[in-house]
Image (cartoon, rainbow, N blue to C red):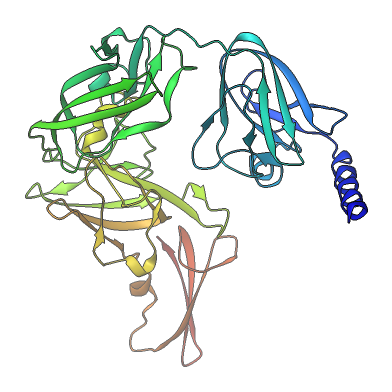
Length: 418
């Protein structure tokens, strides 16, 4: 039995020794998050791989058994890292690192040299070196929207510095925040350095109904625990009597200060006809799609999305596809503050939005083809569409040649513009 086990172990060792290389991919000093340019680790006599680097502040990284210019190939074939959320690691602790994953590891160094050790036999790594805790004396809340924080994602804004409490925790209260959904997100940043930021993923403040809220942000340095409380202090109605379509409709692009204004008679039901060009080809079906959502208020600046966050409304999920089987039926939208987009193929459509029940309906606008091809009492056997190059198309689109064949064998050819 011992001989069999030894033979098996030697086989495993030989298999790993044939591995060309292992890499660390991440921000500086690990190649600046380039899947084709990570740093190569050095193989040791025991089969592990090591890399030495001087680390000051926080770095994010993953391990890899190869490199590729494509993130999709890199992630599915070579990457070793965590899933779900980033994982913060410290020195002298072995950490499991399964192959795959969509997140990264975070390590904070104190300016000395550290040795990263990766063991491919057991898919674990550890970091050796001296890790001195960083002294942090200032904690700042950085986030969005600017209507709450003054500036967006700006740890240098002293107006958002937290106040130390008697129990050693820190807190900051923002009064009179106009919120409608989940448009408020934040992190707590230490010493105004993004290398010291918590939590790893942005924390989002979610409110059930639009209103004015007093939001208190809290932070406990013991365990880097981030929290908040949100108390409604007044009413806020995001309905302004106007409704605009944001996005890729009627020649517009995504710009918070530009929208197509919809018509209304009662400031509750809004209508508009839109034309979309299908600017975004889908790699799966090859169809070009356009994306759009709605807002009751436009921004004063082309780069200021945060000021209209609570006024935006859209689909229940981002990129919600509007297919032909949905034309003419009620489509439920999300609440204000949830700016998810709809996607629709190129075409001309009639859109109706009812803000009383957050329902949208969309129908394809008539292109007049049926009227043009009808010829008295003849019975149509079939219609075929061609572009000006003579290529057959599924439907009329743009300048189109419609060839109608009747049951008596006769044909009629007309040019239509959709």
